[in-house]
Image 1 (cartoon, rainbow, N blue to C red):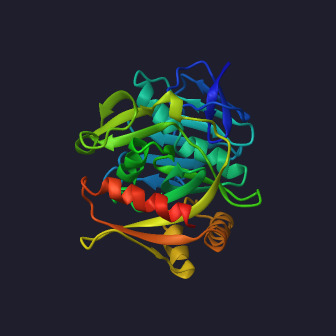
Image 2 (tube, rainbow, N blue to C red):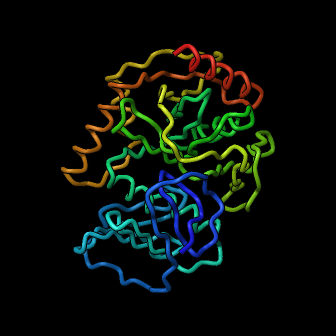
Amino acid sequence: MNSLGTCYGYDIHSTMELSYLRGGKGDRLHVSVVDVDHPVPDEEPLLEWLPTEHPFGAALWRLPTGLWQLWVDGVGWFRIDPQGLRIEVPVSTDLVRLEERIWGIPTLLCFLERGDLPLHAAAVEIDGKAVVLAAPGHAGKTTLAGACATAGFRVLSEDLTCIRFNDEHPSIIPGPAMIRLREDVSSHVKVPGNVLGTSEGRVHIGLDTANRGTCEPVPLAAVYLLNKTPEGIAIEPHSPVDALSDLWGLSFRVPTDEDRTRCFNGVVDLVSEVPVYDLYRPLTYATLPQVVRALEGSVLHA
């Protein structure tokens, strides 16, 4: 297998074509295509995502061997070995869609194993510092991340953010160099990069090569909780106690006592070590440049 580039701090080795990788080095992670129709495990899945509540349906099992098995509707079976750093993926003719699924739950399980915290959030780099843009789905975090890219800032992740705590200060490990904008948004927010396809109501963009960088950790300056308001743009400190509840809802965990403890401790560490702010802004295209400038000003004065 060839080394193709990096994602979430891993040096990706694979024979398949991948479009969203960055430069640099990392621990070797093997991604291989396996033409096997795995049987459905006898037990109930640990986690299940229903298509009525999420963009696609999926289910996740922990096998007796310690491996993970993931079913994704419309794609097929994935098998993940987080300790051995191997991900098996199904045969697919839609390589863009397949790759985007690889950088979701399968890779999340790998960096969860090494002790990092997964958060359902976007992240961008502003003046050498990382900021997390946190909000539930359909709250405009990807649109704001795209506006940051348009302004010349580097997108570190657009939906799944990897937070590391084993350095002197929490940092972000950059994920796939991609962004998926709703079709209506893409006509207003021009992200530098290559359009790789359109599906599921979104335009899939591989970020411009010159702005991808590496997967080296970026120091985390702040977390911004996105709020909609017609009153104008404002950035205000957010209570760490309230932030604990908000970020708990955006974190990934499996329904076991051990993993709930792991996740809770990670979120406590995050709100203890990193300032959290409320970012209030109108959800209009015209105000996006002003929101980005306010965000940059907040980071510079943090």
